[in-house]
Amino acid sequence: MRHHLSLEYSMLSNIVDELANHGWSRQPLFVPAALTRALAAECRQRSAEGELSPASVGRGIGQEVRETIRGDHIQWLEPGQSEACDRYLDIMEGLRQALNQGLYLGLEDFECHFALYPQGAFYRRHLDRFRDDDRRAVSAVLYLNEDWQPEDGGQLRMFLADGVEHDVQPEAGTLVVFLSGDIPHEVLPAGRERLSLTGWFRRRGNDLF
Ligand code: OGA
Ligand code: MN
Image 1 (cartoon, rainbow, N blue to C red):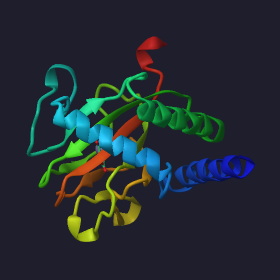
Image 2 (image 1 turned 45 degrees about the horizontal axis):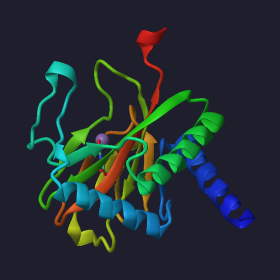
Image 3 (image 1 turned 180 degrees about the vertical axis):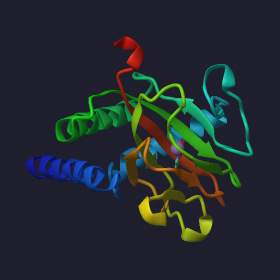
Image 4 (image 1 turned 90 degrees about the vertical axis):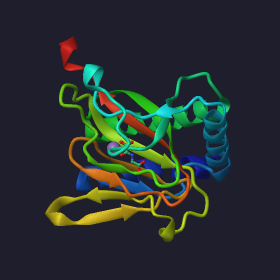
């Protein structure tokens, strides 16, 4: 137990350090394989039951589905839907607290959706921030795809400082965290179905002040 807790602690502090120093972090094996598998099974089941909807771009009345920009299908998570989802939300609550303690970001909550990219789908280069809403501060994506090969495509490509591009394989159990307003990124066309849980830690809205 002690061993487990200290491992977990070193992973969280590693994420905090990398975010502070580079604006992003990648953690392989962020969640246990059994949990990743349960989440993947749930995503596929929700999809089979027709619960995922084509994702839209923009917000409010400017919101529309545009498959030439993004082709994934999503469903938002709510607490109390399943044991696996609740465990994941608990883990992310731990990460939220670590980020607040280490970086003073004042993150208030975490919103998160399943995302399924059918074969051939992609998401063009963008920033995870709406023009009229800057509450999203830190993006966090957990991948759910076992045995992803480089030739399967579907990499997350991040555009870092000085023209450096960095690709992340969407392999099961890997978590990518990055500053939502700082790092433009895209999802390359997926050669096979690609599953993830994509979420955002948010600050308090300005309208509350
Ligand atoms: C997003 C996004 C990245 C990924 O949903 O905004 O950029 O790797 N996802 O799934
Ligand atoms: Mn994004």
